[in-house]
Image 1 (cartoon, rainbow, N blue to C red):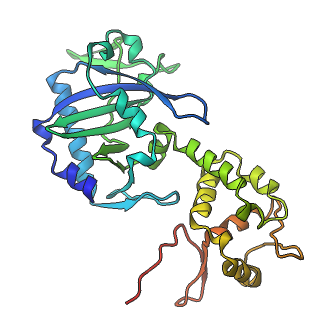
Image 2 (image 1 turned 90 degrees about the vertical axis):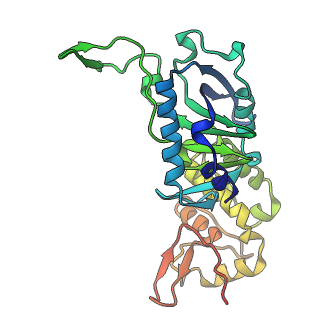
Image 3 (image 1 turned 90 degrees about the horizontal axis):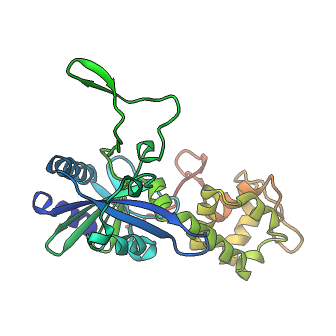
Amino acid sequence: MAALDDVRGFRLEEASINLWAFKGPTGSSDEAPRYSGYWVDTTDQVDAVLRQIVQGARQRINEVIDYDLLAQNNEGSALTIPTNETYADRLLERAAAETDGRRVVNLAQLRNSSFYDIKLVYEDTVIHAIRKTDRSWQGKRAIGLSTLLFQENVLALEDRPKFDIDAAVDFIIVGGEILILDKAHFESVLRYKATLIEDFTELQGEAEFTNVFVDIGPLVAFVGENKLHLRRLSAIRQKGHYKDAGFMQRLRELHEAYGLHLAFDGDGKVVVSPETCRDVITALLDHRLASAFSESIYDVPSTTPVRLG
């Protein structure tokens, strides 16, 4: 709750405000992303709108949920993750100071920006409210579309450069933590998918995991670079059920009763095929559960333990 408390208690109206436009992330998936950012002078009217956007974002958050690869937030919640578990530091160092060399002086520095940062500073607290840009920030107008301006009772073509600012933000960085309102945009801006790919690569080199299978090849092919599957495999690694001999033995004994289509060889290793990959993932996530109340069997998105007593 520390990050949410910092945002709620922030003196928004008294803070200085700057708008940064960023391009990136760039670079290969096996290295830290690179960002190019410039800050732009804004009018008092624009500043007022930016403050309203941040105010609306902090009013929306009623609770925080620890970030998990499979966790999802709702309209009134935000996921939270430490900045040091992401590439946020790469972004923050680019927006550290509004120097003359980083000021926008031509249109090309704004065109094709991939996201913008509403940066607010009050005393020792700095807030960065990030939002992915829409197509109005791209280099060319969409084919077949023209913007009309109604002025003095006449519709005319609006040919001046136009950049839209959304009423929402995707995530907020404050005090060493990130409050995530749009998970997909957060992962895109900070290249969290690259981290998932790296995690899966490391998992494939983990003997405790590969020894569970006769051949891991079909599972690797099934996962590919699909972000949802990569997220699930990273969650499997975090949970580590494949390391638990008791878990694996019960899986061999009970998989049919729970409707899981799995196959095992004579040594008890999982035989993976393209048809069984989904059930293999479900099983190792421990997402096939039974209700003692309805006596039904469910697939669940999360398996948070409940403390009894």
